[in-house]
Length: 511
Image (cartoon, rainbow, N blue to C red; front, side, top):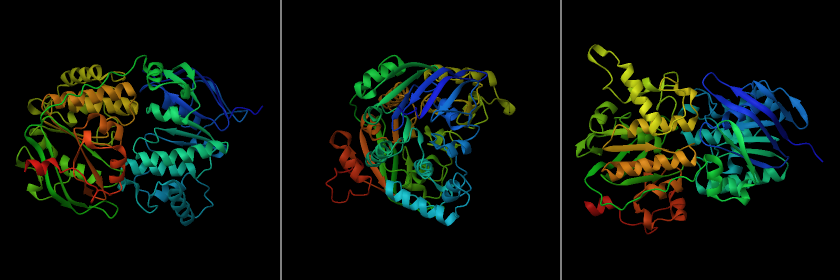
């Protein structure tokens, strides 16, 4: 019998406020696609970083291809044949795509050869990206493509994937799964982290379940249902969505022929984008990452104020020139797709991160009421079940899913009149996703207008009343959720809506 590809024995990792992994053992065979399942903060990412050499365990051993190894850094991991695609990307913003990939490859290669390989691999796997683009010009989804391509270029024996499909279209997911199944058939082992249970059941033949940093179960996911996997992971099935049919009210947000030239050579021009969002409805925008979502969201949040004033109206007021603070005064609250850096200051505690969108904790003379901030942050932590050391925990110390819950909770707690959110459940577990979606629907039922931008089609179909699709800076007509289909929206994500028989946009019907 051949040796296991990977064997973890009694891995323990402690941090000052939490034990991330406690006596964790697992075995991955050659050619096996092995899922690691657990709710946010269960210790999955820490365990993967230990395998990849970016975190050192306090106890336990790692055995790779039958040999005990002490992987001290990612470079040693790659030399062994271990590659990883991180959920939080490890890319240098000021370098190009090719330069970032080059850092992890054989330095004898010329940069031009690396760029050629990137283009070839990207084309082969349907993950097209320009090697010459600086990373700071990429959307989150495009950064994820870079990470996947970088890992595939190393021809790994063990490939670790942390939420690899969170911002891919259904068609791209299908194509990626073909690639992963081919890699597995050639002997590559895959460790797969995802909160999409149907993906795990389709792709994986083994599964280790973590809860609170400990192994609580092992199973073959192909013999399980979504419900049974949920019970293994969170101890219960996620609560059902409470989606009531309501009549939409006044127009909260109106975008009229919004046309904006890109701010950098790698951006996307917005071309006559028009949409309406009414009080008491959820409007979803689907699309492949990098098709103008970032530019549209910058214009809607007030970070880009170049548009003509009347191109963006908030409750009837021309608002395109308003900065974010003035829009918040009108009741607009916004959740960006970038958690660290825009949604939260990494080094600040959760309480002080409240100050990004709250001013009521600042008293006369500019004094900050720290006690009030901490109390308020604590309430959000409890309401949204955020796993953190407390209200003063640094934002960067939280897992991605828990930070997402806090940021979304912070803005929902502000009782917005217009709520704009990008990727609301990216990287959160099924229970947390259900909680966030139900909170969004509760906002909508209370009369808030909600605009959701997401590459997660299942999510958009679950919570939206109407859908748009954005492609190459253009926006499709709107279609009622009940009349839309996944194949139709998938086609529209390629820009194929002209002459496709779309329903009449509601904003035209209300005009």
